[in-house]
Image (cartoon, rainbow, N blue to C red):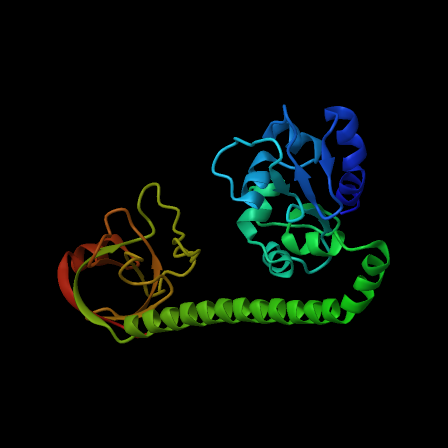
Length: 284
């Protein structure tokens, strides 16, 4: 903001020495001189060509001697990010969009941090900066209550947005928990017919420990079945026809889909069991 006030205040002196008869009024206008180009005027007044075109509704860069160009609506101020600021709240405060702020400052994301400084181009700044010195000093004092109110409104909006985001996260977590509970309820009490074989812990190369860590060699009377976890979750209590209640505590490379492997204490018991179709019910 200070930089632009200096530029406008000294434009008449600088441009007079640079162009000769060039002139700029204190109201923020400039009269085009012979030999002027839009690029030269933009350079002398520290603005861009596009800003000059937008401020004067120009569709090309052609200008003519004695043509009056408006400079008062082209203003650039510097906003220092405060704690709690967002690009959205900054844009709301100055009447610009988030995309404009990002474009003016070469930003690639919406993240801002306290202490950062951003260039803001706004017509509102022009109105306050083209006023006389005494009025310029008095204006901020008159606007202080409005600024405080705007900050309060901004803080309220940010708090409401934060609460809304927290509510959405809580709703998503609750939905996930309900879905998990529903899946568990659907698994409980489910009955099906499966193909069942039998195995022991005494086979060659067998560790005797299940996928869930049960030592079957130390617990030869344990009722354990191997399952496909995508069909019967590990840890489920399952009633197996002809075998009794067991725990789904093991897996097997050949146990896929509607197949189970019941644990028995000896090879002879496994041979006696053979391969059969049985009805099972997932209890819990």
